[in-house]
Length: 82
Figure 1 (cartoon, rainbow, N blue to C red):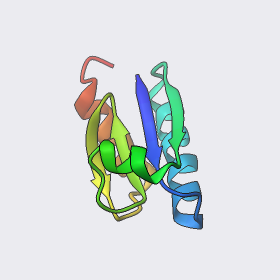
Figure 2: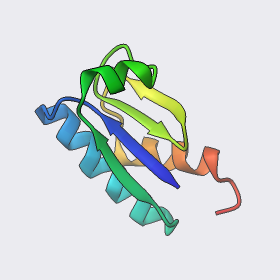
Figure 3: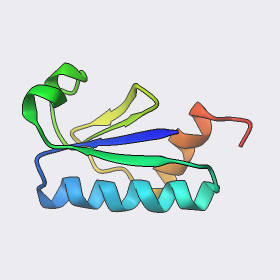
Figure 4: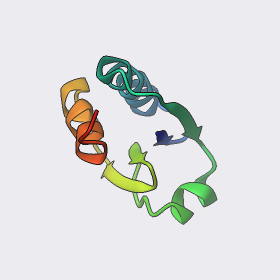
């Protein structure tokens, strides 16, 4: 599974990356975490605001900071068999 955290490196973006990694570890799923900091790439991925979270190409949230529990739920929605 590919988890992309979109943001320029601000505190919220860093927190989202930490939370996303923790959530993925809790699920036990294999994952790759990618941080996207380039604004043109962020816009191309469809995020109008940051921080944003993309799971396997699907924009799951933008402009807010979900909890670890919320991210776990998002991951399980994308991969219900895990």
